[in-house]
Each structure stands twice: as structure tokens, then as C-alpha cells.
Amino acid sequence: MEPFGVLGVDLSPRDLRETAYEILVGACRSSGSGRRLTYVSNSNSRDRSSQQLSPLSSSSVQRSLSTLELDASAVKKDLGLKTRKKNKSDADRLGGAASEVQSNLVRKRAGVTVGELVRVQMRVSEQTDSRIRRGLLRVAAGQLGRRIESMVLPLELLQHLKPSDFTTQLEYDACQKRILKILEAGLLVHPHLPLDNSQTAPQRLRQILHTASGKPIEIGKQSESMNILRNVVTSLACRSFDGSMSDTCHWADGVPLNLHLYRILLQACFDVNDESSVIDEVDEVLDQIKKTWVVLGINQVFHNLCFLWVLFNQYISTGEIEDDLVFATEKMLVEVEKDANSTNDPAYSKILCSTLSLVLDWAEKMLQRYHETFYRGNLDLMRCVLSLGISAAQILDSGKKNKELDVACSRVDTYIRSSLRSAFSQTGKREGHLEQKIF
Image (cartoon, rainbow, N blue to C red; front, side):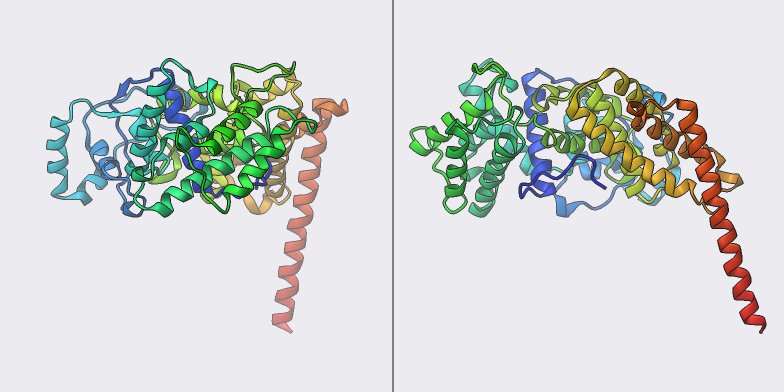
């Protein structure tokens, strides 16, 4: 299920995740965010050595044993999500490690920063994190006071990251190729403003990218190829509606590139060790994520729609085991419905329709066979799924001048008839099977 559309550029999930993390770290540094958070997580510790997430991969144990209390999450309260409770059996299974961890907690007064938490949640290694921060420090040193929205971040990192920052030359080359593909996606395939075919910059950038696919670009300060790339990229990124050069650079705010990147950031709200569970620190994590809005061109209505999809998709992808997620989706749909009635953005309307169509399709599959799906013990889930289906249908039909009551009655009647036919069909099949056995 993909409501945002395909990117049309060969970017792997890891490529997008690293780019999203670069934007997040850059946006937080640009905004001067340095506040620390002492937090409690109740996730089980699992071995993530392949992701090189130490030391925080093991510090989930520390957090679960901490005696520090965390204020109740306003987001979880609003969405009806339960705050996780400490599990004594988890500590029992840790055995002798518990006392060692507790002694470490006494020494670690400052706690863990929100940034460190997000790093682990996004499965970004310490090595990658350090490399990104070194690159951003070099960028900041040469452009004091310049905010992240006034620069093309991949271009700056391309020039300031060095081969010595990487373990191998192959890793460095892969990073350079990823950055160039991001520029292609953000400036040529999904630009913030439509490209002007009369301009030479788009064709020039395509030529540069084609050449770079076979031979790495020289990135020295005096490099002619780098200067040409910078000039071309800047001319494309700083375009405005009236044709003048803008102070704001647009390289990651074209739909759907921005939505793919933003979804990856929102997925950091789910526990890396229990993907059906929203972390208790979701408020602080969302505060950091929202700092990327200025780069990604996200606003509150796009955030609400993306968050709805992330909650819903997480429920589906984790096997529909945590009903709280679909209940939270229902609450988010209330906000999305308000947004839909007051927003005329064509790009938003397109994503809204594709997102709610997927939600409606899923709900109808459940409701058209509700005799098989629901029972006395999960009637709350049935009510929620029915609400999702009817609300999604009403929003999608809003432009067809149908009354809400007509939509609701029509849908419910369809679900009842369909489920009854299915139930009778199953009964007939069972009776026929019994008759065959008897005779």
C-alpha cells in the first residue's frame, strides 16, 4: 500500500532514511535545539549489532530499569494510546545485568538526549551520526548564521564530507551517489515548482548527473565541476513563482518526495524493539520532527494526514495486533476531516484521496464479511472500523453533493447485505461438504 506515489528515482529505504536524518539533525542545529531529555523506555533490549546502534541499543535496558518518571504524553492521551508500564519479568530475565545497569544510571546524571533517542529509533548508527554532525559543523563554520532553509543541504554535505569520514572509499562513493540522486529527485523529478523547459539549468543538471554516474565529482573548493554544479543547483532550488531568486531553497519540498521523507521521520515514533507500540516520548520526538517542516514544506494539514497514514499502516504492517493504533487512526481522521473541509490545495487533495481510498478499501473488506471478522469480544473494533469506513467514504464523496446520512445508510446497508450473503454462502458450502461425507 502506497498512497504517496512512487519516487521514480533509484533511492533505497536506507538512502531515504539517511537523508531524512540529515535534514532532521540540520534543522535541529539550525533552530538551536540543544535541550536534553531524561526519559524512561520500557522496551526489551535486542541485539542490533548489525545496525551498529551501540550504546543506545543496550541502553533500552537502562531506560527500562530507571526509576525516573516521565510525564504522561499529551499526544498519546489525545489519541487514546496507553502509556506503557514497566514489566517486572523483563528485569527478572536480565538477571545480574540489572544491578550493573542501575549503578551506571547513578553515574549518568544527564540522561539521554532526544536526538540520541531519535537516532536509535531511526536505526542510524553512531558512525553515521558522527559523520553527519562533522559535516554540518564544517558547513556551519563556513556559513555562520545561515539557516537550513536558505541552503541546499545535500550540496553542502557533498562538498564538506571527506573520504576520511568514511570507512572505505566505496562507502564514500555510495554516499556521493545518494546525494546526487536526492538532488535529481528534489530538483528534476519532483520539483517544488514546475520546470521551465526554456531554461538550460534542468538539462545541464541532467548532464552533470549522467557524467557523475560513471565518474565521481571532484568536490574541492577550487573544483570547476563543483562550482558548475553549485550554480546549476542554486538556480533551480531558489526559483520563485514570480521568476525572481528566492532566499529559501526548495530541494526537498516537492510532493511526494517530502512526504516519503516525512513518513520516515514519523516512523521514529514507534518503538524500535516493539513496532506496534508508540514510544512514551512521542511528544518530544514530534517536537524535533516538526523542525523539518521548513525544509520539507510540511504544514499542519499534511502532518495530520501523514500521521494518520503512519498509524494506520503500522497497524496493518505489524499484523493488526495492537488495536490502539486503529483507534488512534480514527481520532486522527476526525482532524483530517476538518482539514479536508477547509483546504483547497490540489496536491493535498490528491494525497488525501489516495490515502483515504486505501483506508476505505481495508475497512470495507472487513465489514463486507463482518460475521467472520467480528465477535462479542471485539465489538469496539467493529465500531471503529465502521466509523473509519463511513468517515472515509463521506470525505471522498464530499464533492458529489451526497448527504452524510445518505452515505452512512448506503454503506451500512451494503455491508449488511454483503456479509449476510457471505455468511449464507459459507453455511451452504459447509452443508454441502457434510452431505458428501454422509453419502
